[in-house]
Image (cartoon, rainbow, N blue to C red; front, side):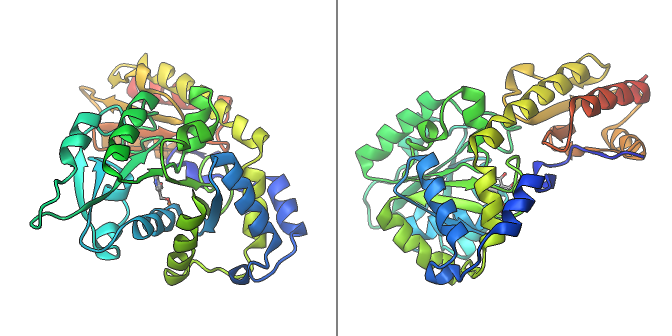
Length: 344
Ligand SMILES: Cc1ncc(COP(=O)(O)O)c(C=O)c1O
């Protein structure tokens, strides 16, 4: 039985081109700057994101944590959108490792409300923690891969500038945002002082993320990366895959995932019990509410699994499906047909 895995975009396997690049990479000790592929990948990422420098880190979680540590001091407060990945899904690292408090500001379109951000910035007072960082996220993971509006990022950037507060962008899927908006990723990253980008999600590399920012920021970040165990020595095999992941062709391919996600959303939305806000399908995620007189969400998930289709139950009372390179248009049609049969 074929398996159609719609649980996550981290299931993408390296392409033949990545494997060949990895095979041919010359290895060296990256901690001493002697791994050519890592150095090349870092220069490429800095260029693509419009920043002075970049470093390769093992994961997005580590990249975000290194950014928090580099921008702040213990006892400071940071501002995030209320459901930001940094707050909800990084095992409390901001508090536990970086010693930070988090002030949240809601933003159902993915960007924290700018007036709310302005209000959340602490006045100078001996009783208050110092607000030292504002975090943004694009795409917004918990809101189903939506792309927050750049006008909001711009307003937040102006507010941050007025108060001398830096901005970090969790851009795990920034290239999905850039493809969806039809702009270069650096046009999104320019609203932030630092940006983390994942190579291991829709871009298909097996491991790794990039953290990009100014020369001075990366100098500091490199020390924290080492402290957290991110000095990975001979990283060339991984970085060679990362270089292919950041090629224009590979980035452009994300539009096929977005098209397949829309196809899936349109198909499911015509089936009894499904409710999908099609205007919120911006990238490769489909969040579908499901309420049916005979079948519950967990029964639907189990029935799909029996047919080889893997989806994730969603907090909002439905299912979440994530499309990536491992899923093609036939898989989408098969999924829609199978759901129809289960529900009828
Ligand atoms: C928005 C966002 N930020 C950060 C991360 C963390 O990345 P990693 O899984 O590589 O630690 C994820 C992972 O899914 C994510 O969705």
